[in-house]
Amino acid sequence: MKRKITRFILYIFIALTVISNVFLFANFKFNNTFTLKNNMLILGITVLLFIYYIRLNKNPQYAHAIVNTEKKDKDQNSNEFFTKPKTTFKDVAGLEGVKDELIEVIDFINNPEKYKKMGARIPKGILFYGPPGTGKTLLASAVAGETKSTFFSVSGSEFVEKYVGVGAKRVRDLFEKARKEAPSVIFIDEVDAIGAKRHLDSNNEKDQTLNQLLVELDGFNANQTVVVIAATNRLDLLDEALLRPGRFDRHMYISNPNVKDREKILKVHTKNKPLDPGINITDLARKTHGMSGAHLSNIANEAAIIAVRENKRMITVSHFEQAIERIVAGLEIKNPTILYKEKEVVSYHEAGHALIGKILNTDMVQKVSIVPRGHALGYVIHMPQDDRYILTKEELCNKIMVMLGGRAAEELVFKHLSTGAKDDLKKVTEIAMQMVCDYGMSNLGFIHNEPNMIHSLSDSINQEINKIIDECYKITYDYLSEYRDELEKISIALLEKEALNKTELDELLDDFLSAPGLRNKEKELEASLT
Ligand code: ATP
Image (tube, rainbow, N blue to C red; front, side):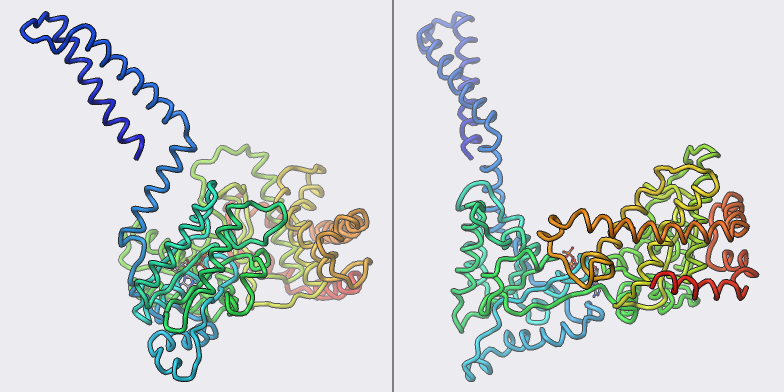
């Protein structure tokens, strides 16, 4: 604002300077308004204004704060800040348990008298936590839609400010507005940005913002139908004061969908799309293991875009497969410039992963490819057939061996270690570390290590991690040496066709997969790991 006013006055004085000079030098003597003295005065004021204006601009933090506050005030006064969503529970597929819990809240907003008579007060704070893209925002907006409430949607990071008191003021304004517009639902996404645990050395501005949020949560009376829903991906980061009864005391875990919920979500997102009758949504749900609702909605949209690109009138299975591949492995790199030698290395690397996956019969190999996508020169898509919640030590070791298959194949064939195994090694180390520190699956015993213990035990932890990885690597290498013919077969086929799907891979390894020796190998492996 200050800058705008200064700029406006500056423009007037620049204009005056120009006019006075024109009059002075054109020798207009008929009026003596523009004498040399007046002229110098106008010029002097203009220069001073100019310097002041430059200084205002040179102070970006100050300017930024002004701009931000202006924007916020404008937002808060405009209707963009809150909405009346049309979303209902019909738009939220699956999540039945969570929806059941929320129905009570909805009933409270719709029939407050019923509860008031009983002396019950509305559950004020609900906390959704869980992985990203699982429908937390969608659910909150559905609560508002079902109750025809005003929906205030903000992100915790919008309250994080440099200047003490600004964030707290925003919280105050938000709640004041929500009370005025009641019944209303306030949704605070990424609440950890303002609600993280406080420390002695913590930031004063953040503390004030959090304190204000606590005050507002405590300040509701029984007649106010305002529900506050917060969401976070990191429940462990939140301050105890936020989680205590009377504040965000209803915690609801929103997980990635299981196969049945994936099917329901895919149905919601393909409802208005022309699908080929050959498409089996149950099958697609199986192929999207581990994906969130956001991934699934993205896949449905990508498949439709691919169908349009190919000038088709319907979306086919192939469009969905391409969309899944794009989401899992990234965007295909067109016309890559890769040396033949490197392509050969990649083909053995990917063949190593695929063959070990087949030998150990783990996580169904859906596709193996050496077409570069994203930052990878090749990839294997695994899709476990079932949703699994518990894994045994053997199953975790199997996962490690599949990931080490690429490096082992390269070492076996080319006698080198290359940079291509970087991502595999990162994942392998993560699993092995969890086995040692979280699951008690090492010689350190049945213990769960807290972060401070990990630091003090770092040498012995590293030793155990190395031991697990070394043992797994040795078994992987031996397998590939023993089944080198099969490794060569996959690699040659990859160099020829660039990609093999599950059926093609099974056909290629037909004799090998049905050989009885392989089943005996599984038993040997179990024995060596226990
Ligand atoms: P984040 O934690 O990253 O903020 P979120 O959990 O709030 O994510 P949403 O923004 O609610 O996730 O979901 C993103 C999109 O994913 C939704 O707009 C919707 O299209 C789709 N989606 C997610 N879950 C579901 C579901 N259960 N039913 C239908 N669509 C869903």
